[in-house]
Length: 142
Image 1 (cartoon, rainbow, N blue to C red):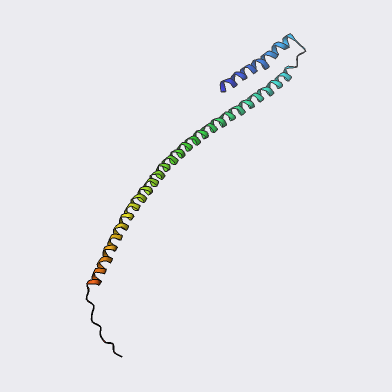
Image 2: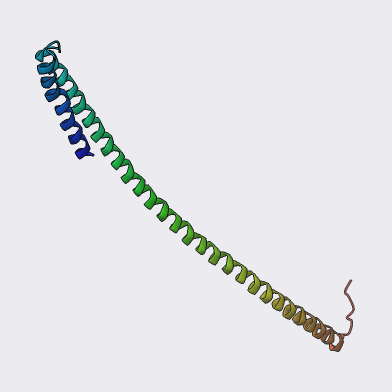
C-alpha cells in the first residue's frame, strides 16, 4: 500500500512540477510559475492527506481483522465447552436411567420378600393363636 502511494507521489511530481515547466517553454500563455507552484503544493498536500487517510483505514482494517480472529477463537472455545457439557449431561442422564432401573428392580424384590415375610408371619400368628391354650374364665367381681 505504501509503495503504491509513493508511486502516486512520484507520478504527481513528474506531472505537476516537471510537465508545467515544459509547457511554459512551449506555450508562453500557460499560467505563471507561482500559480502552478501553489496549485502543485495544494495537490501535493491533498495526496499526502489522502495517503494518511488510506494508511489509517488500513490500520483500522488490520485491527478489525485481529478482533475477528479473537472472536473466532472465543466461538471455538465456546463450542468446545458446549460439547463437553453435552457429554456430561449425557453421562448424568445415563446414570439416572441406570439408577432408576436398578432401584425399580430392587424395590420389586424387596416388596416380594416383604410380602412373603408378611404371609409367613401372619400364618405363624394364626398357628400360635390356634395352638395356645385358652385360660379358664374367672368370675368377675361385682
